[in-house]
Image (cartoon, rainbow, N blue to C red; front, side, top):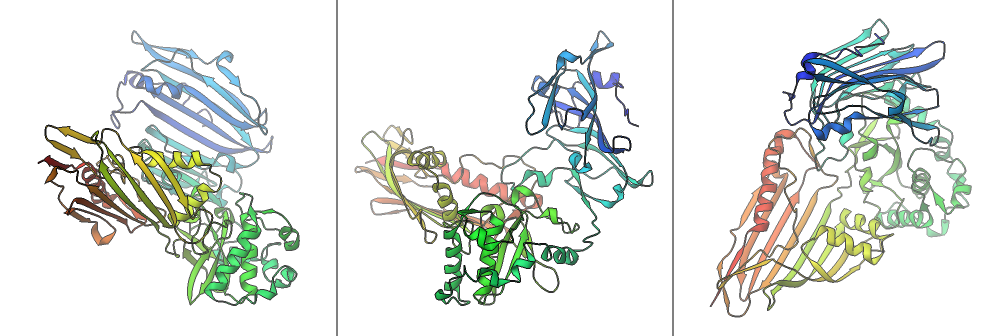
Length: 607
């Protein structure tokens, strides 16, 4: 078992020139095997890992450079490998020697060994195996069946004391071939075949949520249910105890403000806390049980800042409770696992006018009812009394609202020049304010330029970047090059110089991953083109009004002449946060339409 199939490279695999399951693959993992066990003598957990990789194209040579990270100098053992080639019908093996194994500098007790496989060419199969040790089996988990190249077969074994206390959950879109939840009576065995390459696609919040993998969580004696976990959390020193003793903020709380439970007072309390602290950038759920000490600090973690917000709100008479959540980068919460480690952030749910609002006070540049983008991840658990309650993280109804108004002229050199304004509201304004908090003028211009590469800026100004409320406004002047085609006595041009998308990000006809947005989108564009003297309109793009099923999104385009001007109005809305694979064809068609309409020309004819 512990040798797996190392050294057993088949003639058939060496003769392979194309992987039939994915003819575009640069390489394919033929064998992917892992065993997590426990060494009773060393009293440490270990992983034995074995892989065989077929190189199908020069682009796959990167897979012949292996990198292994581990903690402690004696934590990597039994490393061996070789390159197999077919030479005149005979299998030729070139083993990895000491010269091909290098240890990189140790950083925080983490050592990285790199292996460069010798004699690798198109058609080679590389074969390797090693053993790693760790104090915890969680160092080797989760197990990924899927990677950036296809995998023909992946097997994972788990066998150590108490391994049955680890509860597995399968992620991804490839079904298991087999699963033995009582392997050798006390372990787990998983097998998956023909796993496609994972190709990252745009508009996916966290790609790791979609890999085919098996994730494990301990079935804890402390919490067999979410109710028990909630009670455990509320009894943790520094959290539940602090919440129940509001007199601990007696010398901090400004009684003279006479705050009550009104929306205006909620706004004031939020601003009071947000302006008092500078967030130190730390997430997590570690709370300090000394409010006076934290209040006297210049910086605090997100958990401490929002704990103060909660206590102030309760002191003012609000019904408020903490909400534990998982940020986007931390991954989706699995409702089947009542475990503390699934959470890494806390915000506050406060009831105002009998409606829930989620509040976070880590930024003085964000309104009370707009959460940070990284918090908008599915749902969170309310730590209140009664039954367990889950709240959608988009309960505030945040939207990214943007509008652009652009005036255009054709100069004497037949180039488009003009000026415009842009308004950013709600979530879009908060994102911009956060970016501008530490941005100089050049960084602001670079951001605008990266989003509008067709414009050459002459002027750019912003207003409203230092206040939490109200829109952010920008004004700009620009010129362009090559946006007007003068052919004979006609001018051909598209007035859409600010484009929704440069290229359609949804080119594939079939998509496996969902299309995800953190917030709904509302965008409006107005372009006013002055018709040059001595010209008339010969042709204009036709109007369009495309609506996705169930009103999930829409695109509206209108082009019309009004006196000596041509006005183009574009409205683009996304009203849904996730589109599944079955909805993808309509969604793709929406973006095909957007790209096409952006390029359609107005034709002006000389009189």
